[in-house]
Amino acid sequence: MKRLAAALVVIAIAAAGLFWLLTMPAHLDAAITANADAGDAIRGERIFNAGGCASCHAAKGAKGDERLELGGGLPLATPFGTFHAPNISPDEKTGIGSWSGAAFMNAMLKGVSPQGSHYYPAFPYTSYARMKPEDVADLWAYLKTLPAVERANIAHELPLPFRLRRGLGLWKALFLSDQPVVAIDESNAQLVLGRYLVEGPGHCGECHTPRNLIGGPVKSGWLGGGPAPEGDGRIPNITSGKGGIASWSDKDVAYYLESGFTPDFDAVGGSMVEVQENMARLTAQDREAIGAYVKALPFADAK
Amino acid sequence: MRKFIYAIAAAGLLISGVAHADAISDRKAVMKEKVGASMGVLAKMAKGEMDYDAAAAVAAFQTMNDASKTFGDLFPAGSESGGETTASPKIWEDMDGFKAKLAKFGDDTAAAVAAAPADKEAFMAVFGNVAGNCKACHEAYRVQKN
Image 1 (cartoon, one colour):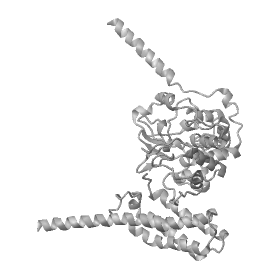
Image 2 (image 1 turned 180 degrees about the horizontal axis):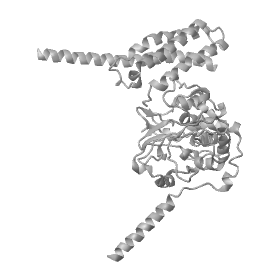
Image 3 (image 1 turned 120 degrees about the vertical axis):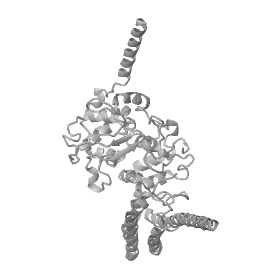
C-alpha cells in the first residue's frame, strides 16, 4: 500500500513536471529579435492597417484620428468569457511605452507577455505568428509614433478554469504555428502576398474560420464561415464553396475591400465595416492580392 | 360566441402575420430593386465601367431619395423576425437612431439631386457622400445571415 502511494506521488510529480514543461512560454531566438527596434514607421503604417489594430484597441466607433488613440477598450464577448482589448498606446504607465522591441515581437509572434505569461488567443497571435519579423519591427516603430493615452486596462471577465493562463501552453502546442495554412503556387508572387496578408496580419481566419470546442481553428473549414461568435447572424464563407463567393471575381473582392460594395451592390455591414475601412487604406496591389488568394482557396462549405 | 372570438383572433393573427411577411418582403424589394439597382448604375459610372450620364445619375439619386421616405415605415412591430430578414434587432431597440440614419440618407440623396452634377468630377464628390450612407446604416442595423 505504501509502495502504491509512493508510486502515485512519483507519477503525480512527473505529470506536473511534464505539464510545466509543455506549457512553458516560448520566446523567440535573439537572432530574430536583434532588429526589433530598427523598424521603419512609414512601412509600419501599412501593417497597422492590414492588421486592423485600431478596430479593437481604439475606442469603439472611433473615426479619423481617434483611431490612432490606442487606449484599448473593445469588449470581445466569446463563449469562454469577455475579453477587454488592452492599452497599446506608447503611454509608459498604462500602455506599452516601456516595452522593448523584442518584447513586442514576442507578444506578436509567440503570444507571450513581457512578464513571461501567455496571452489569451483573443489577441490573434495565432495569425500574427505567420508575420515576418521585419514587418513586426516596422509596426513597432509606427506604434511608437502614435499619441500616448493614459487609461488603465480592464481585467478580462472569465470563469475560473480559464483564469489560469499556464494551460494555454497546451492550446498553443496544438494551434500556434508560423507555417502558412494553404498550399499555393509559391512562384506566384501575387498569391504569396495575398496569403501572407490574409493568413498573417489581416487575421481573416480568426472570424471567417469555424472553431472547435476549445476555440481552435478548424483548418478543414478554412475561411468557410460559421455562426457569428458575438450575437446574432453568421460570418460569411469567403471561399468559393457552397454559400461562398463563387460568383465573385478577384477584382470584385478587391473592389469590395476598397468600397464596401458587393458585386450586386449590397453594402458591407456589421463589424466588417471597420475591417473594410482598414483594407481601403491599403494599396490596390495589396487588395488585388487578397482577391487572388481568396479566389484560389480550396472550397469550404458554410457550416 | 367563443368560437367566433377565436375565429376573429385567428384571422387577426393570420392577417398580421401576412402583413409582417409583406413588410419584410417589401423592404427587401425596396432595398434591392430600388436602392441597390440605383447604386449599381452609380457605381458603374464611378468605376468607369459606364460613361457618365448626368440624367441617369440624377434619376438614380431620385429613386434613392423616394425610397428613403417610405423605407422607415416597413419595420412595424412584429416584423423583427421571419422571412429571412437580415434586419438587426437594434432597429426596434433604437428606432430613433435608425430613423436618423435614414433621414441623413434622405438629405444626402436630395442634395445630390439638387446638385445635378454635370460632369464626372462633380459627380464623384456627391457620390461619395451618398454611398457612405449604405454602410453607415448597415454597420449598426443589419446582420449577416448567410
